[in-house]
Image 1: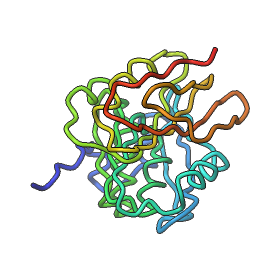
Image 2: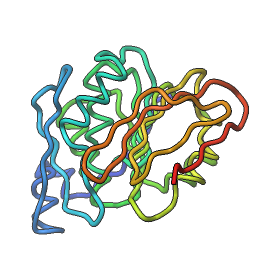
Image 3: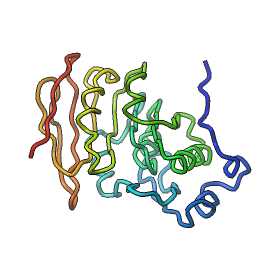
Length: 216
Protein backbone atom coordinates (compact mmCIF):
# COMPACT_ATOMS: atom_id res chain seq x y z
CA UNK A 1 0.00 0.00 0.00
CA UNK A 2 1.58 3.35 -1.03
CA UNK A 3 2.60 5.59 1.84
CA UNK A 4 1.04 9.04 2.00
CA UNK A 5 3.60 11.83 1.70
CA UNK A 6 3.81 14.41 4.44
CA UNK A 7 1.47 17.37 3.99
CA UNK A 8 3.36 20.25 2.45
CA UNK A 9 2.33 23.89 2.67
CA UNK A 10 1.56 25.78 -0.57
CA UNK A 11 4.80 27.74 -0.23
CA UNK A 12 6.63 24.45 -0.82
CA UNK A 13 4.22 23.01 -3.35
CA UNK A 14 4.76 25.91 -5.75
CA UNK A 15 8.44 25.08 -6.06
CA UNK A 16 9.83 27.95 -4.03
CA UNK A 17 11.41 25.47 -1.61
CA UNK A 18 12.93 25.60 1.84
CA UNK A 19 14.69 28.94 1.49
CA UNK A 20 11.42 30.67 0.66
CA UNK A 21 9.76 28.99 3.64
CA UNK A 22 12.50 30.23 5.92
CA UNK A 23 12.37 33.79 4.56
CA UNK A 24 8.61 34.07 4.71
CA UNK A 25 8.07 32.54 8.13
CA UNK A 26 11.22 33.00 10.12
CA UNK A 27 13.40 35.51 8.32
CA UNK A 28 16.44 33.26 8.68
CA UNK A 29 17.46 29.77 7.70
CA UNK A 30 20.28 27.37 8.49
CA UNK A 31 22.08 24.79 6.41
CA UNK A 32 23.82 21.54 7.22
CA UNK A 33 25.77 19.37 4.80
CA UNK A 34 25.40 15.60 4.39
CA UNK A 35 28.87 14.14 4.92
CA UNK A 36 28.69 10.63 3.42
CA UNK A 37 26.93 8.29 1.02
CA UNK A 38 25.00 8.97 -2.17
CA UNK A 39 23.86 12.46 -1.03
CA UNK A 40 27.31 13.47 0.15
CA UNK A 41 27.94 17.24 0.07
CA UNK A 42 24.26 18.01 -0.54
CA UNK A 43 22.90 20.76 1.69
CA UNK A 44 19.84 20.53 3.91
CA UNK A 45 18.12 23.82 4.68
CA UNK A 46 16.12 24.23 7.86
CA UNK A 47 14.27 27.11 9.55
CA UNK A 48 15.61 28.78 12.65
CA UNK A 49 13.51 27.34 15.46
CA UNK A 50 14.01 27.34 19.24
CA UNK A 51 16.01 24.29 20.31
CA UNK A 52 16.74 23.11 16.76
CA UNK A 53 20.44 22.23 16.82
CA UNK A 54 21.73 19.92 14.07
CA UNK A 55 24.21 17.28 15.20
CA UNK A 56 27.67 18.66 14.30
CA UNK A 57 29.65 17.14 11.44
CA UNK A 58 32.33 15.72 13.71
CA UNK A 59 29.78 13.99 15.92
CA UNK A 60 27.91 12.60 12.90
CA UNK A 61 31.17 11.29 11.47
CA UNK A 62 31.89 9.51 14.76
CA UNK A 63 28.35 8.11 14.95
CA UNK A 64 28.44 6.61 11.46
CA UNK A 65 31.87 5.17 12.12
CA UNK A 66 30.26 3.42 15.10
CA UNK A 67 27.29 2.23 13.05
CA UNK A 68 29.34 1.27 10.01
CA UNK A 69 29.46 3.41 6.90
CA UNK A 70 26.72 1.44 5.14
CA UNK A 71 23.21 1.04 6.55
CA UNK A 72 22.10 -1.00 3.55
CA UNK A 73 18.76 -2.69 4.15
CA UNK A 74 18.17 -1.25 7.63
CA UNK A 75 15.05 0.52 8.90
CA UNK A 76 15.81 3.72 10.80
CA UNK A 77 13.74 5.99 13.02
CA UNK A 78 14.60 9.64 13.69
CA UNK A 79 12.30 10.57 16.58
CA UNK A 80 13.13 14.29 16.87
CA UNK A 81 14.19 14.91 13.30
CA UNK A 82 14.74 18.68 13.45
CA UNK A 83 17.03 19.55 10.53
CA UNK A 84 16.98 15.93 9.32
CA UNK A 85 20.78 15.69 9.50
CA UNK A 86 20.76 12.20 11.04
CA UNK A 87 17.85 10.74 9.09
CA UNK A 88 19.02 11.98 5.69
CA UNK A 89 22.56 10.83 6.51
CA UNK A 90 21.13 7.34 7.13
CA UNK A 91 19.19 7.43 3.84
CA UNK A 92 22.33 8.60 2.05
CA UNK A 93 24.13 5.52 3.37
CA UNK A 94 21.62 3.00 2.04
CA UNK A 95 18.93 2.64 4.71
CA UNK A 96 15.91 0.99 3.08
CA UNK A 97 13.49 3.05 5.18
CA UNK A 98 13.84 6.17 7.32
CA UNK A 99 10.91 7.53 9.32
CA UNK A 100 11.35 11.10 10.57
CA UNK A 101 9.08 12.39 13.34
CA UNK A 102 8.87 16.14 13.89
CA UNK A 103 6.13 18.18 15.58
CA UNK A 104 7.27 21.69 14.61
CA UNK A 105 5.30 22.63 11.50
CA UNK A 106 7.98 24.77 9.82
CA UNK A 107 10.70 22.19 10.48
CA UNK A 108 8.44 19.39 9.22
CA UNK A 109 7.70 21.27 6.00
CA UNK A 110 11.42 21.85 5.51
CA UNK A 111 12.08 18.11 5.96
CA UNK A 112 9.46 17.30 3.34
CA UNK A 113 10.98 19.84 0.93
CA UNK A 114 14.48 18.41 1.44
CA UNK A 115 13.11 14.91 0.83
CA UNK A 116 11.65 15.99 -2.50
CA UNK A 117 14.74 17.94 -3.53
CA UNK A 118 17.06 14.98 -2.81
CA UNK A 119 14.69 12.42 -4.29
CA UNK A 120 15.02 10.50 -1.02
CA UNK A 121 12.25 7.97 -1.62
CA UNK A 122 13.28 5.89 1.41
CA UNK A 123 12.34 8.77 3.73
CA UNK A 124 8.89 9.27 5.23
CA UNK A 125 8.22 12.52 7.09
CA UNK A 126 5.60 12.36 9.84
CA UNK A 127 4.20 15.48 11.52
CA UNK A 128 3.55 14.56 15.13
CA UNK A 129 4.62 14.20 18.73
CA UNK A 130 7.28 11.53 19.33
CA UNK A 131 5.89 9.96 22.55
CA UNK A 132 2.37 9.80 21.08
CA UNK A 133 3.68 8.31 17.83
CA UNK A 134 5.54 5.59 19.73
CA UNK A 135 2.27 4.54 21.39
CA UNK A 136 0.63 3.71 18.07
CA UNK A 137 3.61 2.63 15.94
CA UNK A 138 3.27 -0.84 14.42
CA UNK A 139 6.68 -1.47 12.87
CA UNK A 140 10.17 -2.21 14.15
CA UNK A 141 13.44 -0.46 13.52
CA UNK A 142 17.10 -1.49 13.41
CA UNK A 143 18.52 1.95 14.23
CA UNK A 144 16.93 4.79 16.22
CA UNK A 145 18.21 8.35 16.52
CA UNK A 146 17.12 9.93 19.78
CA UNK A 147 18.05 13.60 20.15
CA UNK A 148 15.23 15.29 22.10
CA UNK A 149 15.29 18.95 23.19
CA UNK A 150 17.44 19.38 26.26
CA UNK A 151 15.91 20.25 29.64
CA UNK A 152 12.52 18.74 28.79
CA UNK A 153 13.19 15.49 30.66
CA UNK A 154 11.47 13.35 28.03
CA UNK A 155 14.16 10.64 27.79
CA UNK A 156 12.79 8.43 30.61
CA UNK A 157 9.34 8.09 29.04
CA UNK A 158 10.80 7.65 25.56
CA UNK A 159 13.15 4.87 26.63
CA UNK A 160 10.29 3.14 28.43
CA UNK A 161 8.17 3.09 25.26
CA UNK A 162 10.95 2.50 22.77
CA UNK A 163 11.42 -1.31 23.04
CA UNK A 164 8.04 -1.99 21.39
CA UNK A 165 9.39 -0.59 18.10
CA UNK A 166 12.87 -2.14 18.24
CA UNK A 167 14.07 -5.07 16.16
CA UNK A 168 16.36 -7.64 17.76
CA UNK A 169 19.77 -6.11 18.54
CA UNK A 170 18.57 -2.67 17.49
CA UNK A 171 21.00 0.16 18.11
CA UNK A 172 19.90 3.47 19.61
CA UNK A 173 21.88 6.69 19.35
CA UNK A 174 21.22 9.12 22.21
CA UNK A 175 22.24 12.76 22.61
CA UNK A 176 21.71 14.25 26.06
CA UNK A 177 23.23 16.54 28.63
CA UNK A 178 24.38 13.62 30.79
CA UNK A 179 25.31 10.05 29.95
CA UNK A 180 22.87 7.18 30.34
CA UNK A 181 23.85 4.04 32.23
CA UNK A 182 22.65 0.84 30.54
CA UNK A 183 21.08 -2.01 32.52
CA UNK A 184 18.99 -5.10 31.88
CA UNK A 185 18.33 -5.73 28.20
CA UNK A 186 20.26 -2.59 27.22
CA UNK A 187 23.98 -2.79 26.48
CA UNK A 188 26.34 0.18 26.16
CA UNK A 189 28.37 0.09 22.94
CA UNK A 190 30.15 3.43 22.58
CA UNK A 191 30.12 6.85 24.26
CA UNK A 192 31.81 10.22 23.90
CA UNK A 193 31.35 13.91 24.67
CA UNK A 194 31.46 17.04 22.54
CA UNK A 195 31.46 20.16 24.67
CA UNK A 196 28.38 20.08 26.88
CA UNK A 197 26.75 17.21 24.96
CA UNK A 198 27.00 13.51 25.78
CA UNK A 199 26.39 11.16 22.87
CA UNK A 200 26.35 7.39 22.95
CA UNK A 201 25.29 4.22 21.18
CA UNK A 202 23.36 1.54 23.07
CA UNK A 203 21.98 -1.81 21.94
CA UNK A 204 18.65 -3.48 22.70
CA UNK A 205 19.28 -7.17 23.37
CA UNK A 206 15.92 -8.63 24.31
CA UNK A 207 12.16 -8.47 24.46
CA UNK A 208 12.09 -7.52 28.16
CA UNK A 209 11.29 -3.93 29.14
CA UNK A 210 14.93 -3.34 30.05
CA UNK A 211 16.14 -0.46 32.17
CA UNK A 212 18.11 2.68 31.55
CA UNK A 213 18.91 5.31 34.12
CA UNK A 214 20.66 8.63 34.14
CA UNK A 215 24.23 8.46 35.37
CA UNK A 216 24.10 11.46 37.68
